[in-house]
Image (cartoon, rainbow over all chains, first blue to last red):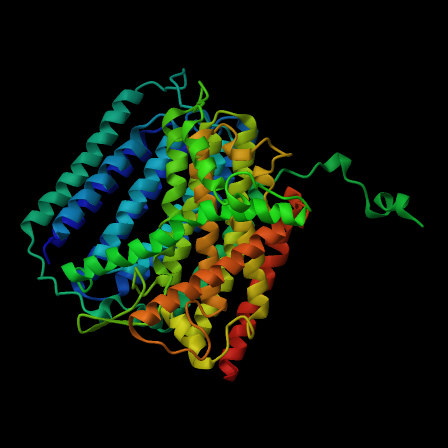
Amino acid sequence: MEVPIQWYLLLAAALFAIGAAGALTRRNGISIFLSIELMLNAANLTLVAYSRLLAVRTGQLVVFFVLAVAAAEAAVGLALFIAVFRQRHTIDVNRINLMRW
Amino acid sequence: METVIFLIFAALALGSSLVVVAHKNPIYSTMSLVLTLFSVAVLFVMLGAPFVGVLQVLIYTGAIVVLFLFVIMLLNLQRTGRDDSRMAGQSLQIIVALGGAALFALLIALALSRTSLPPVQALTADMVSLKLLSRQLFTEYLLPFEIVGLLLLVAVIGATVVARRPPQADTTTSYVESTKGSEP
Amino acid sequence: MAGSTTPDLVATLVKYAVMFLVFINVAPIMNWVERRACGLIQDRPGPNRVGPFGLFQPVADALKFMFKEDVTPAAADKPLYLLAPVLALVPAFTTFIVLPFGPDLEVGGRLMRLVIADVDTGALLFLSIASLSVYSLVLAGYGSNNKFSLIGSIRASAQMISYELALTITVLAVLMAAGSFHLGDVVAYQRQHHVWNVIPQILGFVVFLVASFAETNRLPFDLPEAESELIAGFHTEYSAMRFALFFQAEYTNMAALAGLGVTLYFGGWSLPGVHVQGLPGAVLGLVTLVVKIAVWMGLFVWVRWTFPRFRYDQLMRLGWKVLLPLSIVNLIAVAAMSLAGWI
């Protein structure tokens, strides 16, 4: 193959790092959520890359399940955001600190 | 040819992911996420997983990100401006977080450059066949499949319950009272 | 990988050119058909000034669109506002790549399937690209910086994703019976069984028909863009050429979804009992497909000027509480029939 698998793995690592940086530093709850989706995608890319390397279909099938779980998580997470917003009228995570020390 | 396509879509994915993470307007972040997800879907197809690529577009960009957009528009979230919600020491936290992320990527890069991976075999029709993939899904992975179905059902019910307006306890009338006026 | 050699690329480009030429003419022709049929149903002439029977009306409209003043709201979110009409065209002109338009053609010593995208995941690719058309609605409404546009676009996109579910499950039932996602295989299945899928899967067809009206925002489901409701819904703030792009995208989407419908339920490019090979067969297949799509589009037009509009809550109720359970019932019924060996 022309493109070495290492490049795919490196790209996935870079996407994961960018997503992690976003999830850790953003104040907007939705932006944190978007960064988490980015990290999930990076993991999916790694899984598919390894699936290709080892010539098995396991990686693709695990990605199938990760996709479904990500959908479920997004639905419930956004429902939680709506509920929190109704109470606190903000989703700035610095302000939603009722249970913080 | 393959290298060119990979480079284009990898650059697109990286660039748009930076916009996702950095842009102040949540709508722009979300649209950049669409671009990232689409580029990754193309990379999936290049890696011999067309079904996963199509599913990524269908589920992720076609449904999940639309849900994000809905919530952003319903809650009318504006650009996150600067206000006094910054805690003390937040700048240091940001620097540490970014540094940690960069360190992680660097470690992966180092690890990759020092290991030698086995050579990649050429793609055969069997490897990308949808029939064989689904056969494996419904025999070897049947239990996770059913569990994921149950999980999605739970998520639907949970999301509906969490997001609905709380019922007004003081204005609920009994069924008898509410049907009084409809006597023939 | 197979399919990436130069002759393959040329073949794909030629096939795309053929289908593109068919689908680019849908909007102007439908413009004329819509207005004449509207006149016919409402017992009035319709456009009859520009050319015989008003046949050059689309040309006049195109000229009008080109020369009209392009008004852009001052407080609009410019990048999103400008992106939306362009984004509307992308799914419209990409979804038809999985529709087969003829029997296998002998080209250069090899048998080539007359599908632009000859991939395993045919129908799924159609549905995934079609699901991207929600974004142009959402961005148009948001970018216009107009309350009514926003409401219209939220309603339109909620309607689209609700009916997408019923549509997908109905399509799944047909694919399950045919045993493949590739639409060429679905047509071959119908030819092999000498019966169009509409007969054994009549419930699925009805659900698909209703869902296709809702997917394309056509009456009786066009509340988001109804003239008497929200000004013009999500494309209120768009004038001249940008509106023309939305217009074109809507009609092309209708034609593509009609193409999917005729391929799944009415045998696509094939006529029962007709087995013409080679280039004449390909031409006949293309013409048959176009005629069937035209009949479906005629149905779209007829229904538009006959029925009243659904209210938004009635619409959502229909999509979730009626069509979705019906499509699941259809799926189970098709599975049972398939196991029993009837289809």
